[in-house]
Picture (cartoon, rainbow, N blue to C red):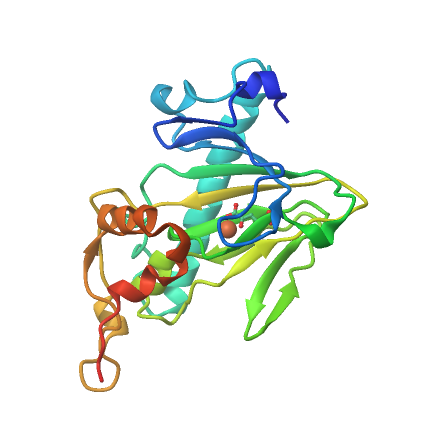
Length: 254
Ligand SMILES: O=C(O)CCC(=O)C(=O)O
Ligand SMILES: [Fe+2]
């Protein structure tokens, strides 16, 4: 993990959507819970000069490792998207154009051991807003997914990634593959690190339910067509009620 000086002295440094951030002991807007979370975010794939100039430069192995990792994850994501498309009865190339060809956004999350995990949260409950997330949580538990009123621990499986559907997946599949609320909790025993690779549509991509997933009579479109950039603007503006952003693109059939 980058040292504090490597990350910059301020709490948050934002450069074109990529920032290093420390969020220890920061009160949530909504309550008394404190973050216990250190992270860096940046654009990972493709490893263009424009993206790479924001990566930590003082860590000698960071860039070559990231170039290799992000290309491998990109290929994995494309394979998974092809299998998902076929599983839904869509053409195998359905997701391989603009829907998944935006730059990937990566978060490297670090949750140090916390003396009292009941007072802190690693990451607040959220849904990923992109198409698909490929998450490595190594071998330390901490990721939880909401199932009804309960939070279920997503047990780490050595060598396996967690694949999470984002809001855009929910829209294009007309609600069949729904985005899932998830969060990260802290623990007192060991540090935990996760690496999330968020697969993005291109900014100009038009998002709409696939026609194959819509039947005007039996299963009408649940979401209106939108530009991905429009969704991101609405999400950024929504602040505290981000979970409700998806609702604002819903078509009401009542
Ligand atoms: O740390 C984790 O397991 C969750 C990370 C996550 O949800 C995210 O970065 O979007
Ligand atoms: Fe997430």
